[in-house]
Image 1 (tube, rainbow, N blue to C red):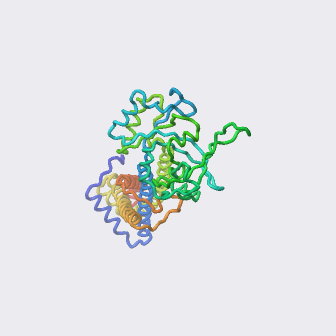
Image 2: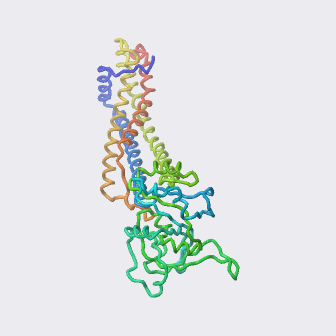
Image 3: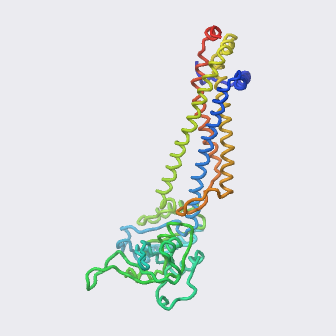
Length: 421
């Protein structure tokens, strides 16, 4: 008998529903059926809620990246003329009109030349590794929209010092306030009368910015480009170009075009710069889906038990149906239909519960995350494809679980069933 030829005829559906309703007062069988429904419902709802939460975290991460000004990054390689340990002449991208071509694109909002260098920021006895980004004065003006605190008046002891803008997370870590004196220490040593010593330059905290990106606020320090040139003791050099887009989704296509236009430069969009993070999120989502799928598999074992006991209980009825000419595939379809009813009820209940839980978590701040998370509340994302995917996988698992008891019912000998009864 080919089980691919199973069909749910009207009388098959009617008999299956009747068998499911009447269990001759068997409380144990009814209890197992209830456990099957609840087990599948719990597994389905858990998978949907977990996937929604993880997708919510990814969505929040993308929003944070959108809030920053770094959407596409262009960096020189050793093949660029004048390359020296990451530094290249300021006019490198201006040649052949490439910079003007980038600025003329509709989706490009700003093209910012940057002189960046790693350094150690020290205040008192506290230190932290940072990336000092020297940017034009126009970029410093744009950064003002993210300022949350600034120095209203220059104090007497820091009035003559160049200013730096630090992130909120770094200010919290080092207990910094606008007007405080800090020192930038270069890890690159310079020769002096007392052997090699690190380069140091005093600054004052001009302002504190907040973009919502934890890593940027903790690592990036902004100042005017001339201050970094003085710090690294190099003139008219750059290390990278940052591109901010008005259309965030156009970053990938722009980066692809620039790679062809600039073969000697390394061009990365926001997705590539955070590729490892997104890959880990994808792997975690897959792992959680597989782990929680075992909940549905375990619940499906209860369906196997329920249908097997029902086959034993309905031996006489099955034998009578086969004696009346019912084909084996229709007998199998009866119990397959029962299993799908049980599984479908569990899947439907799980979807309803997951919607209710997701809506509750998204509207009520019942779960507060620790302080080291970017968002303190649990993010939720309603993705219809997750509901369809989880429900489909659960029904496939239920269908596979129904195969054994359905085959057993189809292979029952009618004479043996009537004799035993």
